[in-house]
Amino acid sequence: MMNGLQIVPDWQYYFGNPSGSTLGMLNAIQNIGVLVALPMAPYVSDKFGRKKSLITGAFIMLGGVALQASSSNIWHFVGSRGMIGLGLGFATNAAPLLITELAYPTQRGPITAMYNSSWYFGSIIAAWVCFGTFRMSGTTWSWRIPSLLQGVPSLIQVCLLWFVPESPRWLLSQNRDAEAIEILGKYHANGNTADPLVVLEYQEIREALILEKEMAGEVSYFTLFKSVGNLKRMRIIIALGFFSQWSGNGLFSYYLNEIFQTLGITSPGMKTLINAILQIWNLIMALSAAMFVDRVGRRTMFVISNAGMLCAFTVWTVTAALYQLLGNTAAANANIALIFIFFSFYDIAYSPLLVAYTIEILPFNIRAKGFAVMNFSVCIALIVNQYVNPIALGAIGWKYALVYCGWLLFEFIFVFRYIIETKGRSLEQTAALFDGEGHADALEQAGYDAARHTQIRTRDYEHYDYFSVYIDRDDDKIYEMRRVEPHYTKSRRPGRRPSERSLHADHSGYRY
Picture 1 (cartoon, rainbow, N blue to C red):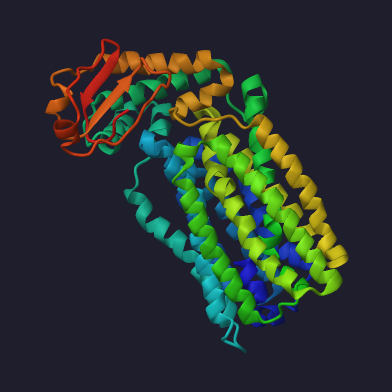
Picture 2 (cartoon, rainbow, N blue to C red):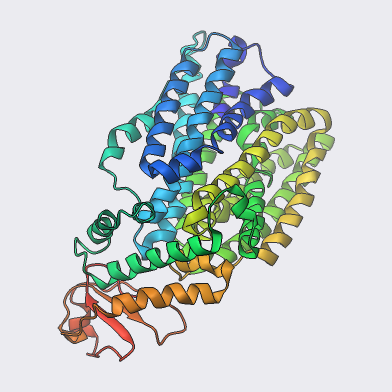
């Protein structure tokens, strides 16, 4: 939104061509609003539920949108952006928690990764709306229309959230077990609450809540820094929050107009077009990466992403220097291409995994508060970026990029050293990794023992012409999943009975 509005001449004229610290304030105020909400958002999410926190945020954002669209001066505009940020703080804390805690086990990774990648849907709409409205020369509607359209997603949320189920994990934490089991059965087993998968999930979640309560006692923000496991989590979460904004992407995401000026691109039409195409490119790359999180693995994607960003940004710095020092137009053209290459690598990990990985490694009792810490880190990084970047770009130009080159090298070393692989585990088992394998094994055993009592062995594999669940504890991995198409087992696979240490049951879904 702000990237596009800065390119619109009528917006620049109406607000007095803001620059330097004033421009920094216009960009940073939304994140200051998020910071104000972050201490409160986890308590609302944990006490009243994920859905109510989302609805609260949506109503606040709708109020902010109305204020922004009716802005009469720059401080009116600043206040509206802060109000939007306040609502965003509640919404962004609750939304990924609800998605992750509702997701079917084998689909959790891609679905949660797609959540954060979907940010680009909004950025595409904002960029292309600005591209279309900047031609409305001489009228404030060239920036009021994009401002109004910000409210559409929140309006859709308010209308449709009533049909979305609450998190079963939150319901269990409130001792509303019957409701939680009903939701797990409906969405994970076609309504069969006695299905072994549902029993396993229920027992794992229940056991995890008991263990977490025993280990942590009364939960507060101080709990995040008490145990060795939590300190390891916070080290990764805080670092990823800063990395997501201090990798050089902040220059391109919020000050693309300033970058274009240094490259000699002055046409508003060309600027808005490049910005709009870049958002489409980002969406394609981010969603593509989200599809591979369970195949490639989280750690591998982070390593590839950081290595690629380091190389791309280093070459981008060289081409920026060649243009500004020597006036090399070929270097300027290469500079634009390198922005797309840089974001290709950024989107491999930080668009899909920033939220997904953070939520995965947090146990339920501190999940909302730990996620708020990640958002707090992101906001601090953004605020510093948004104040410092325009001043530094104006003062030292391309040399400012050298700072990011050094920082990207540090990021790569950190990611290579500390990121832990989490694929192939349930949400509870992933979170338990940081507390020792004994904790993870206890959760697995509790879930397996409960599900074992519902074991069904009435048919051989060759008699099945629909989907199955198969959990085999003989393998090194806890879960082994693959899709079974209708009639596949009957026509192509020889029959086999489950082993003595396995669970086999009818279920419309997947095979583990």
